[in-house]
Length: 236
Image 1 (cartoon, rainbow, N blue to C red):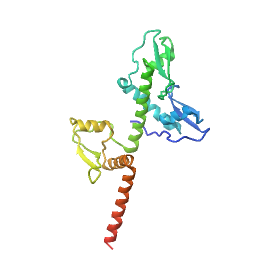
Image 2: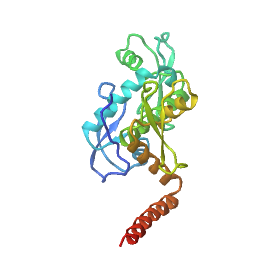
Image 3: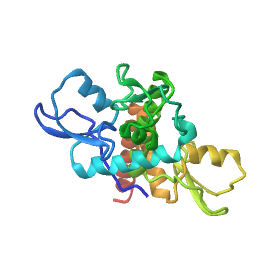
């Protein structure tokens, strides 16, 4: 299980020391840098690649390494040693930017080439590098949301109670017995919409409602507060 990590969402002060999540250093998967505020820095920020502490970036790096190993088909990287002189592609930072993909002619005697192959960082085209980078960015965002909202990521035991945020019911949450053969359960699990605890589902539902309709969510909160006040008045 991955330990909690947190990437920066807002730009730090110019000249501040931060950590960049990048395979440029294939051993650690991160570099210590100074925030410059240049355009490419903001791209790193938007792609969840900037971290304030070494602890956070080390945890994120471990997550990405494991994610790459376990998602070979989805990322579609090269898994077998290419023929000598074959052009292969890699991402300098794997940040999804247009100028990130680089290529070289594969040399089986080159230790760096072999290291990139072993780590799952070689691709057959620049487009494949960019596509994989976007998948990794989404994975980082999803993992962060899992920490925040605590949704289920593994298949529950059949018959165990799971909770689903549902704005259409008064409680805001529905509890069901998990059925692995029901396609809706499989879909909700994949989308991060199933929870083992009612309070976690409720919190996630409120957050989703706020994103969909901020004013409606605010009105709902004010309505509840008004109801509480009027109920208190009835008892006086």
